[in-house]
Image (cartoon, rainbow, N blue to C red; front, side, top):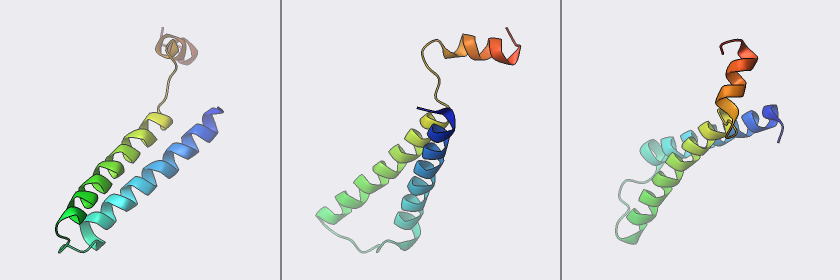
Length: 76
């Protein structure tokens, strides 16, 4: 996958995760009871996973990446 496309996908995924998390905190009904509260918790965990996955897409490096990236930038 191209580096630019991966980063754009990561940004979109992070924005969607932040939007879902913000909706759960500020917009979702706070009087959900019973099993629906478990759904709300699962949606919160999904939002956290989306944010984490987006960050991994943005800052992804292959297995041999750190040494190669350091050589490209002139560090090593």
